[in-house]
Length: 397
Ligand SMILES: *Cc1c(COP(=O)(O)O)cnc(C)c1O
Image (cartoon, rainbow, N blue to C red; front, side):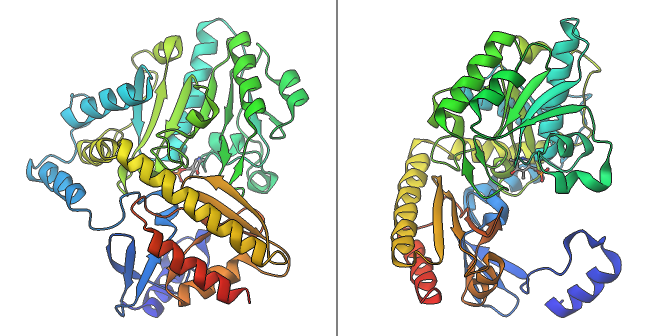
Protein backbone atom coordinates (compact mmCIF):
# COMPACT_ATOMS: atom_id res chain seq x y z
CA UNK A 1 0.00 0.00 0.00
CA UNK A 2 1.17 3.54 -0.70
CA UNK A 3 1.52 6.29 1.89
CA UNK A 4 -1.71 7.93 0.70
CA UNK A 5 -3.69 4.69 0.90
CA UNK A 6 -2.37 3.97 4.40
CA UNK A 7 -3.06 7.52 5.54
CA UNK A 8 -6.68 7.28 4.39
CA UNK A 9 -7.33 3.88 6.04
CA UNK A 10 -5.53 4.89 9.22
CA UNK A 11 -7.62 8.06 9.53
CA UNK A 12 -10.71 5.88 9.27
CA UNK A 13 -9.77 3.00 11.58
CA UNK A 14 -6.95 3.96 13.94
CA UNK A 15 -7.54 6.01 17.07
CA UNK A 16 -6.53 9.60 16.57
CA UNK A 17 -3.53 9.38 18.92
CA UNK A 18 -0.83 10.04 16.32
CA UNK A 19 -2.48 12.56 13.98
CA UNK A 20 -1.01 12.70 10.49
CA UNK A 21 2.25 10.81 10.46
CA UNK A 22 5.46 11.66 8.64
CA UNK A 23 5.17 11.22 4.85
CA UNK A 24 7.23 8.05 4.40
CA UNK A 25 6.50 4.33 4.70
CA UNK A 26 9.56 2.19 5.38
CA UNK A 27 9.51 -1.22 3.76
CA UNK A 28 13.12 -2.34 4.12
CA UNK A 29 16.35 -1.75 5.95
CA UNK A 30 19.94 -2.83 6.18
CA UNK A 31 22.55 -1.66 8.68
CA UNK A 32 21.71 1.93 9.64
CA UNK A 33 19.85 2.57 6.37
CA UNK A 34 16.09 2.38 5.81
CA UNK A 35 14.36 2.09 2.43
CA UNK A 36 10.92 3.39 1.50
CA UNK A 37 8.33 1.95 -0.89
CA UNK A 38 9.96 3.75 -3.84
CA UNK A 39 13.44 2.41 -3.04
CA UNK A 40 14.74 5.72 -1.66
CA UNK A 41 17.32 5.34 1.13
CA UNK A 42 17.42 7.12 4.47
CA UNK A 43 20.20 7.09 7.05
CA UNK A 44 18.51 6.38 10.34
CA UNK A 45 19.36 8.69 13.25
CA UNK A 46 16.26 7.75 15.25
CA UNK A 47 16.24 3.92 15.39
CA UNK A 48 12.50 3.80 16.07
CA UNK A 49 13.09 6.11 19.08
CA UNK A 50 16.22 4.51 20.54
CA UNK A 51 14.95 0.96 19.91
CA UNK A 52 16.71 -0.55 16.88
CA UNK A 53 20.17 -0.53 18.43
CA UNK A 54 21.60 -3.14 16.04
CA UNK A 55 20.03 -1.48 13.01
CA UNK A 56 18.26 -3.52 10.35
CA UNK A 57 18.77 -6.99 8.91
CA UNK A 58 21.35 -7.95 11.56
CA UNK A 59 22.14 -11.53 10.55
CA UNK A 60 22.84 -12.80 14.07
CA UNK A 61 19.68 -11.23 15.42
CA UNK A 62 17.56 -12.75 12.67
CA UNK A 63 19.15 -16.16 13.25
CA UNK A 64 18.40 -15.95 16.99
CA UNK A 65 14.74 -15.20 16.27
CA UNK A 66 14.52 -17.91 13.61
CA UNK A 67 16.06 -20.47 15.98
CA UNK A 68 13.34 -19.72 18.50
CA UNK A 69 10.64 -19.75 15.79
CA UNK A 70 11.91 -23.13 14.63
CA UNK A 71 11.17 -24.67 18.01
CA UNK A 72 7.51 -23.88 17.25
CA UNK A 73 7.12 -22.27 20.69
CA UNK A 74 6.54 -18.50 20.72
CA UNK A 75 4.65 -18.45 23.99
CA UNK A 76 4.13 -20.76 26.93
CA UNK A 77 2.74 -18.46 29.71
CA UNK A 78 4.33 -18.13 33.11
CA UNK A 79 2.91 -21.36 34.57
CA UNK A 80 6.02 -22.83 32.99
CA UNK A 81 9.75 -22.13 32.92
CA UNK A 82 11.27 -21.17 29.58
CA UNK A 83 14.97 -21.16 28.84
CA UNK A 84 15.34 -17.80 27.02
CA UNK A 85 13.57 -16.04 29.92
CA UNK A 86 15.74 -17.64 32.60
CA UNK A 87 18.97 -17.12 30.65
CA UNK A 88 18.17 -13.46 29.92
CA UNK A 89 17.31 -12.87 33.59
CA UNK A 90 20.66 -14.37 34.61
CA UNK A 91 22.65 -12.44 31.99
CA UNK A 92 21.04 -9.09 32.84
CA UNK A 93 21.71 -9.62 36.55
CA UNK A 94 25.32 -10.59 35.86
CA UNK A 95 25.91 -7.58 33.63
CA UNK A 96 24.18 -4.99 35.84
CA UNK A 97 24.94 -6.39 39.29
CA UNK A 98 21.22 -6.53 40.11
CA UNK A 99 19.71 -9.53 41.91
CA UNK A 100 16.34 -10.21 40.26
CA UNK A 101 14.37 -9.33 37.14
CA UNK A 102 10.75 -9.19 36.03
CA UNK A 103 9.89 -8.99 32.33
CA UNK A 104 7.00 -7.05 30.80
CA UNK A 105 6.36 -5.86 27.27
CA UNK A 106 7.14 -2.15 27.31
CA UNK A 107 8.82 0.69 29.14
CA UNK A 108 5.60 1.73 30.81
CA UNK A 109 5.08 -1.80 32.13
CA UNK A 110 8.66 -1.93 33.42
CA UNK A 111 8.07 1.32 35.33
CA UNK A 112 4.64 0.17 36.50
CA UNK A 113 6.37 -2.90 37.92
CA UNK A 114 9.10 -0.78 39.55
CA UNK A 115 6.61 1.53 41.29
CA UNK A 116 4.45 -1.40 42.35
CA UNK A 117 7.52 -3.19 43.75
CA UNK A 118 8.46 -0.06 45.73
CA UNK A 119 4.91 0.17 47.07
CA UNK A 120 5.01 -3.48 48.11
CA UNK A 121 8.35 -2.96 49.86
CA UNK A 122 6.86 -0.04 51.82
CA UNK A 123 3.79 -2.14 52.67
CA UNK A 124 6.06 -4.94 53.89
CA UNK A 125 7.68 -2.47 56.27
CA UNK A 126 4.26 -1.53 57.62
CA UNK A 127 4.37 1.88 55.95
CA UNK A 128 0.95 3.21 55.04
CA UNK A 129 2.01 5.40 52.12
CA UNK A 130 1.32 5.72 48.42
CA UNK A 131 3.58 8.74 47.93
CA UNK A 132 6.45 8.94 45.47
CA UNK A 133 8.93 11.58 44.34
CA UNK A 134 9.39 12.28 40.62
CA UNK A 135 11.01 15.04 38.59
CA UNK A 136 9.39 17.76 36.52
CA UNK A 137 9.95 17.28 32.76
CA UNK A 138 10.21 13.52 33.27
CA UNK A 139 8.64 10.89 31.07
CA UNK A 140 7.82 7.44 32.39
CA UNK A 141 5.05 6.09 30.15
CA UNK A 142 1.37 6.23 29.25
CA UNK A 143 -0.41 3.97 31.71
CA UNK A 144 -2.32 5.84 34.41
CA UNK A 145 0.36 5.21 37.06
CA UNK A 146 3.37 5.99 34.82
CA UNK A 147 1.52 9.01 33.46
CA UNK A 148 1.16 10.19 37.05
CA UNK A 149 4.90 9.69 37.57
CA UNK A 150 5.49 11.83 34.48
CA UNK A 151 6.02 15.37 35.79
CA UNK A 152 4.35 17.23 32.93
CA UNK A 153 0.96 18.88 33.40
CA UNK A 154 -0.02 18.55 29.75
CA UNK A 155 -0.16 14.76 30.10
CA UNK A 156 -2.34 14.89 33.23
CA UNK A 157 -5.08 17.34 32.37
CA UNK A 158 -7.79 15.13 30.79
CA UNK A 159 -7.00 12.15 33.02
CA UNK A 160 -7.34 13.53 36.53
CA UNK A 161 -7.31 12.30 39.20
CA UNK A 162 -3.78 11.02 38.69
CA UNK A 163 -2.91 7.73 40.37
CA UNK A 164 -1.15 7.70 43.77
CA UNK A 165 0.47 10.85 45.09
CA UNK A 166 3.54 12.18 43.30
CA UNK A 167 5.65 15.04 44.64
CA UNK A 168 7.34 16.66 41.65
CA UNK A 169 10.63 18.47 42.12
CA UNK A 170 12.79 20.34 39.60
CA UNK A 171 15.80 18.53 38.22
CA UNK A 172 19.00 19.61 40.00
CA UNK A 173 17.15 21.41 42.83
CA UNK A 174 19.17 20.21 45.83
CA UNK A 175 16.95 21.83 48.48
CA UNK A 176 13.76 20.45 46.96
CA UNK A 177 15.37 16.98 46.96
CA UNK A 178 16.26 17.31 50.64
CA UNK A 179 12.72 18.18 51.64
CA UNK A 180 11.00 15.68 49.33
CA UNK A 181 13.05 12.49 49.74
CA UNK A 182 11.93 11.35 53.18
CA UNK A 183 11.04 8.08 54.87
CA UNK A 184 7.30 8.61 54.37
CA UNK A 185 7.73 8.10 50.61
CA UNK A 186 7.59 4.75 48.79
CA UNK A 187 10.28 5.65 46.28
CA UNK A 188 11.95 8.13 43.96
CA UNK A 189 11.84 7.72 40.18
CA UNK A 190 14.04 9.60 37.71
CA UNK A 191 15.86 9.42 34.37
CA UNK A 192 19.53 10.49 34.61
CA UNK A 193 19.11 11.95 31.11
CA UNK A 194 15.54 13.14 30.51
CA UNK A 195 14.99 11.89 26.97
CA UNK A 196 11.51 12.94 25.92
CA UNK A 197 11.91 16.40 27.45
CA UNK A 198 14.82 17.24 25.19
CA UNK A 199 17.82 15.09 26.22
CA UNK A 200 18.47 16.89 29.52
CA UNK A 201 21.24 15.29 31.64
CA UNK A 202 20.96 15.61 35.43
CA UNK A 203 23.91 17.06 37.36
CA UNK A 204 26.16 14.61 39.10
CA UNK A 205 25.86 16.18 42.55
CA UNK A 206 22.07 16.06 42.33
CA UNK A 207 22.03 12.36 41.47
CA UNK A 208 24.56 11.63 44.25
CA UNK A 209 22.47 13.57 46.74
CA UNK A 210 19.29 11.68 45.81
CA UNK A 211 21.19 8.40 46.07
CA UNK A 212 22.34 9.30 49.59
CA UNK A 213 18.90 10.55 50.66
CA UNK A 214 17.24 7.35 49.43
CA UNK A 215 19.70 5.17 51.33
CA UNK A 216 19.21 7.19 54.49
CA UNK A 217 15.41 7.00 54.27
CA UNK A 218 15.40 3.32 53.15
CA UNK A 219 13.40 4.36 50.11
CA UNK A 220 14.25 2.78 46.75
CA UNK A 221 15.85 4.90 44.04
CA UNK A 222 14.25 3.83 40.77
CA UNK A 223 16.22 4.85 37.69
CA UNK A 224 14.24 4.70 34.47
CA UNK A 225 16.78 3.58 31.86
CA UNK A 226 14.13 2.71 29.29
CA UNK A 227 15.70 5.15 26.80
CA UNK A 228 19.25 5.48 28.17
CA UNK A 229 19.91 1.82 28.98
CA UNK A 230 21.39 -1.10 27.05
CA UNK A 231 24.42 0.82 25.84
CA UNK A 232 22.78 3.91 24.36
CA UNK A 233 25.13 6.31 26.21
CA UNK A 234 28.30 4.27 25.75
CA UNK A 235 27.87 2.39 29.02
CA UNK A 236 25.44 -0.47 29.55
CA UNK A 237 23.52 1.81 31.96
CA UNK A 238 23.68 5.62 31.87
CA UNK A 239 23.86 5.71 35.69
CA UNK A 240 27.40 4.26 35.42
CA UNK A 241 28.52 7.72 34.22
CA UNK A 242 27.32 9.02 37.61
CA UNK A 243 29.13 6.40 39.63
CA UNK A 244 26.00 5.29 41.48
CA UNK A 245 23.61 2.35 41.34
CA UNK A 246 19.84 2.47 41.64
CA UNK A 247 17.93 -0.03 43.77
CA UNK A 248 15.48 -0.61 40.95
CA UNK A 249 16.28 -0.16 37.25
CA UNK A 250 13.95 -0.29 34.29
CA UNK A 251 14.87 -1.16 30.71
CA UNK A 252 12.92 -1.53 27.49
CA UNK A 253 13.51 0.32 24.20
CA UNK A 254 16.83 -1.15 22.98
CA UNK A 255 16.54 -4.41 24.93
CA UNK A 256 14.67 -6.30 22.19
CA UNK A 257 16.04 -4.43 19.14
CA UNK A 258 12.38 -4.01 18.09
CA UNK A 259 10.76 -7.02 19.75
CA UNK A 260 8.52 -5.73 22.57
CA UNK A 261 10.17 -6.40 25.93
CA UNK A 262 10.65 -4.41 29.12
CA UNK A 263 12.54 -5.35 32.27
CA UNK A 264 12.42 -4.27 35.89
CA UNK A 265 15.63 -5.14 37.76
CA UNK A 266 16.06 -4.86 41.51
CA UNK A 267 18.79 -5.29 44.10
CA UNK A 268 19.01 -6.36 47.72
CA UNK A 269 15.85 -6.58 49.78
CA UNK A 270 13.90 -4.65 47.11
CA UNK A 271 14.39 -7.63 44.81
CA UNK A 272 12.54 -9.85 47.27
CA UNK A 273 9.56 -7.55 47.87
CA UNK A 274 7.17 -9.36 45.52
CA UNK A 275 5.82 -12.74 46.56
CA UNK A 276 3.73 -15.24 44.58
CA UNK A 277 0.60 -13.59 43.21
CA UNK A 278 1.81 -10.01 43.60
CA UNK A 279 2.56 -9.39 39.95
CA UNK A 280 2.33 -11.09 36.58
CA UNK A 281 2.05 -10.70 32.83
CA UNK A 282 0.62 -13.02 30.21
CA UNK A 283 3.09 -12.08 27.49
CA UNK A 284 5.93 -10.73 29.63
CA UNK A 285 9.07 -12.85 29.34
CA UNK A 286 7.81 -14.88 26.41
CA UNK A 287 10.44 -17.03 24.67
CA UNK A 288 10.61 -15.05 21.41
CA UNK A 289 11.00 -11.62 23.04
CA UNK A 290 13.56 -13.07 25.47
CA UNK A 291 15.52 -14.72 22.64
CA UNK A 292 15.72 -11.23 21.10
CA UNK A 293 16.77 -9.70 24.43
CA UNK A 294 19.36 -12.40 24.98
CA UNK A 295 20.96 -11.79 21.59
CA UNK A 296 21.04 -8.01 22.12
CA UNK A 297 22.41 -8.29 25.67
CA UNK A 298 25.19 -10.61 24.52
CA UNK A 299 25.98 -8.36 21.57
CA UNK A 300 26.42 -5.23 23.72
CA UNK A 301 29.95 -6.05 24.84
CA UNK A 302 32.95 -3.84 25.54
CA UNK A 303 33.70 -3.41 21.85
CA UNK A 304 30.16 -2.30 21.00
CA UNK A 305 30.11 0.09 23.98
CA UNK A 306 33.39 1.69 23.00
CA UNK A 307 32.11 2.14 19.42
CA UNK A 308 29.01 3.89 20.82
CA UNK A 309 31.24 6.03 23.08
CA UNK A 310 33.59 6.96 20.22
CA UNK A 311 30.87 7.68 17.65
CA UNK A 312 28.90 9.60 20.28
CA UNK A 313 31.89 11.78 21.20
CA UNK A 314 32.62 12.43 17.51
CA UNK A 315 28.97 13.20 16.71
CA UNK A 316 28.68 15.53 19.70
CA UNK A 317 31.89 17.40 18.75
CA UNK A 318 30.59 17.84 15.18
CA UNK A 319 27.27 19.19 16.49
CA UNK A 320 29.20 21.60 18.73
CA UNK A 321 31.22 22.83 15.72
CA UNK A 322 27.94 23.26 13.86
CA UNK A 323 26.66 25.32 16.79
CA UNK A 324 29.77 27.54 16.60
CA UNK A 325 29.12 28.05 12.89
CA UNK A 326 25.40 28.72 13.34
CA UNK A 327 25.02 30.21 16.83
CA UNK A 328 21.84 32.02 15.77
CA UNK A 329 20.17 28.64 15.06
CA UNK A 330 21.66 26.02 17.43
CA UNK A 331 21.61 27.23 21.03
CA UNK A 332 22.64 24.06 22.91
CA UNK A 333 24.05 20.59 22.29
CA UNK A 334 23.49 17.98 25.01
CA UNK A 335 23.57 14.29 25.76
CA UNK A 336 25.88 11.34 26.09
CA UNK A 337 27.01 8.62 23.70
CA UNK A 338 24.48 8.16 20.92
CA UNK A 339 21.64 9.97 22.69
CA UNK A 340 22.14 13.58 21.66
CA UNK A 341 20.00 16.69 21.46
CA UNK A 342 20.49 19.97 19.61
CA UNK A 343 18.21 22.73 20.83
CA UNK A 344 17.23 25.30 18.20
CA UNK A 345 16.47 29.00 18.62
CA UNK A 346 13.13 30.51 17.59
CA UNK A 347 14.70 31.10 14.15
CA UNK A 348 14.21 27.43 13.31
CA UNK A 349 11.51 24.86 13.97
CA UNK A 350 12.64 21.37 14.98
CA UNK A 351 9.67 19.68 13.31
CA UNK A 352 10.30 21.56 10.05
CA UNK A 353 13.99 20.57 10.15
CA UNK A 354 12.94 16.96 10.75
CA UNK A 355 10.68 17.04 7.65
CA UNK A 356 13.30 18.69 5.46
CA UNK A 357 15.91 16.13 6.52
CA UNK A 358 13.48 13.33 5.69
CA UNK A 359 13.28 14.67 2.12
CA UNK A 360 17.09 14.71 2.08
CA UNK A 361 17.27 11.08 3.21
CA UNK A 362 17.80 11.32 6.99
CA UNK A 363 15.50 10.16 9.77
CA UNK A 364 15.83 12.13 13.01
CA UNK A 365 13.62 12.72 16.03
CA UNK A 366 12.51 15.74 18.00
CA UNK A 367 12.06 16.16 21.76
CA UNK A 368 11.15 18.71 24.39
CA UNK A 369 11.28 22.37 23.44
CA UNK A 370 12.37 22.79 19.80
CA UNK A 371 15.11 20.18 20.11
CA UNK A 372 16.43 17.80 17.47
CA UNK A 373 16.95 14.34 18.96
CA UNK A 374 19.49 11.90 17.59
CA UNK A 375 19.47 8.25 18.66
CA UNK A 376 20.95 6.26 15.77
CA UNK A 377 21.61 2.51 15.73
CA UNK A 378 24.89 1.69 17.52
CA UNK A 379 26.44 0.61 14.22
CA UNK A 380 26.32 4.15 12.79
CA UNK A 381 29.59 5.17 11.12
CA UNK A 382 31.63 8.38 11.09
CA UNK A 383 30.90 8.73 7.36
CA UNK A 384 27.15 8.62 8.00
CA UNK A 385 27.49 11.21 10.78
CA UNK A 386 29.50 13.45 8.43
CA UNK A 387 26.75 13.25 5.80
CA UNK A 388 24.13 14.39 8.31
CA UNK A 389 26.32 17.23 9.61
CA UNK A 390 27.03 18.45 6.03
CA UNK A 391 23.31 18.41 5.26
CA UNK A 392 22.45 20.32 8.45
CA UNK A 393 25.22 22.82 7.67
CA UNK A 394 23.73 23.49 4.23
CA UNK A 395 20.23 23.70 5.67
CA UNK A 396 21.27 26.34 8.23
CA UNK A 397 23.09 28.59 5.69
C1 LIG B 1 9.85 5.53 25.96
C2 LIG B 1 9.98 5.71 27.42
C3 LIG B 1 9.07 5.12 28.31
C4 LIG B 1 7.84 4.40 27.85
O1 LIG B 1 8.11 3.25 27.14
P1 LIG B 1 6.93 2.51 26.32
O2 LIG B 1 7.58 1.29 25.78
O3 LIG B 1 6.46 3.47 25.27
O4 LIG B 1 5.85 2.21 27.29
C5 LIG B 1 9.31 5.26 29.67
N1 LIG B 1 10.37 5.92 30.12
C6 LIG B 1 11.27 6.50 29.30
C7 LIG B 1 12.45 7.22 29.87
C8 LIG B 1 11.09 6.43 27.92
O5 LIG B 1 11.96 7.03 27.10
